[in-house]
Image 1 (cartoon, rainbow, N blue to C red):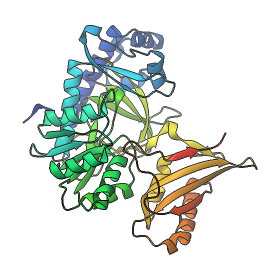
Image 2 (cartoon, helix red, strand yellow; image 1 turned 120 degrees about the vertical axis):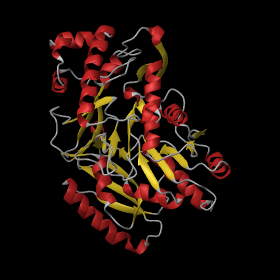
Image 3 (cartoon, one colour; image 1 turned 135 degrees about the vertical axis):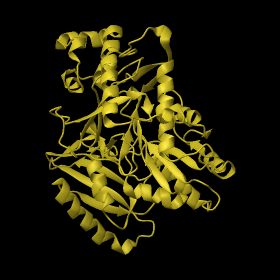
Image 4 (cartoon, rainbow, N blue to C red; image 1 turned 180 degrees about the vertical axis):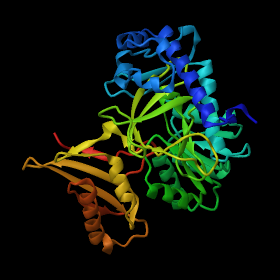
Length: 428
């Protein structure tokens, strides 16, 4: 059995791995990072105080602001001589969040990602077309690294260049496509538009980096003739994509709890949420050398899924990423997450997968929300009026604020090979 498939033998075994990893991480960070040493000292916490997993809650949090303030080498806990690579994600203040990696970090990341491909049921006979960004981002190199560690054939195309994507889909016959959900939809619609459905061999689509609606996933499977779509979470601060994957039963994302501890906390009180409630994902790594994370607030929102998965895996599960706590917008005093609008629209029939939310402030000083929603590809334009009224009622009932809904022609909202922009706030 490949070593990346080595799994935990029991829940008690996993807890033992986590406690040892937590104690190692605290010691490694304290000894190697002036930032963490000061945080521990200011909090009055000694390394000998970490005796159980419950002691994790005594540790201070780390935030994106901490990373940006420490630019260019935040959280660095090893000498520069041990660093073999850097990756970075975008920063809201102009300073990117830069992470450093040791050779062991790269190996661990490859193993985690290879485990994702195994969880999706790939074999070494599969061919994987990788359509995500390369460069300083973790996306492209992460998907390729895991593919090569797993042993399948990587076709590293990157995003964009639709003609080349189509040519490779036909000529190289990849069986797996890795992309953002928006890029996967763009390619699926292009395959359909060009009449290539019977000439491509894609059976599985793996995507992350943005929330995908059920309608979007269904459309991608339909147009590709694919059997499965999978969600792959991850963030640059925690290696990159590949921190988990939903199995072929699609009853939640198994996350690799032998590499990190995941807390789901109320983003306002920072207390653990009740079982099944939505909260913010907080990461503590267990093996990461270059830039370990201790209670890192990701701002991503999800919920934990209790119980055992029928697939038999002992790895715990969380739901799909439901949005970000800092994506929230306020309309007439009501807090709204784009993910909540996603969930409401997902229950509607007769609409497509694409939508936009427009926020305006008019002369009366009040805020107004307009939701543009694409009609289903086979939808009847004569049904637009009653359908928009129904969605308006559902939005008002669920969000507790009114909004206008306009049904637009299928395919009229822009497609992208990156992440789709959903919210357009035009208020001053």
